[in-house]
Length: 193
Image 1: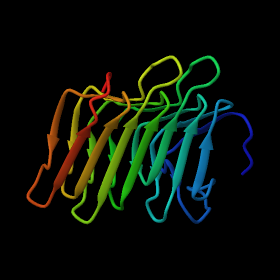
Image 2: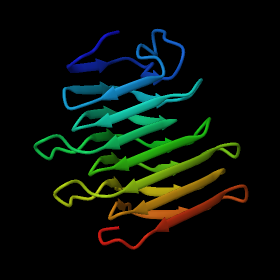
Image 3: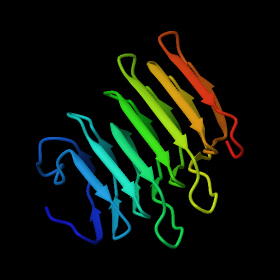
Image 4: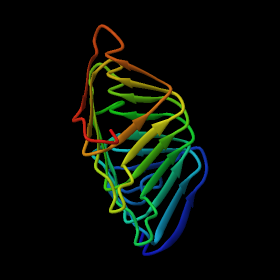
């Protein structure tokens, strides 16, 4: 699949997986970049790295929407020339490290929003790490927000790092939610964090 610009909408119950090998649910293989010229709309779940390693980069004002997400290695980074942030909007839950290890990096004024809960390290055999770092050129913080709960270490090892003025907002939060879980949150104290 060659995609240089415009909008792609993925419909149906299968959602979209970004991992290897390429097949009907994985038309992009294990790597996908969404930049200012691209918008990806996934009506169901967007999974990055489930049956294999996967990387999703949202850069330069690119936009991704999905009903929920399971993550291997996604990144929302920066803004376009007009200051529009690279954005991933989830209308459901977001899991960073669900059936495998996961990493989420939000930097340069990037924005990730989740309507429902956010969980780092959902399974006892997984680890999850989220870094929310820095601001864009105008000082707008990189942001990870939810109107629901945040769990850092549900059953596995979870880490949340807030640095360089990054911002994390949620209704409630839990660190180390079960007997098998470990959780760590660090905030470097930079204004805006």
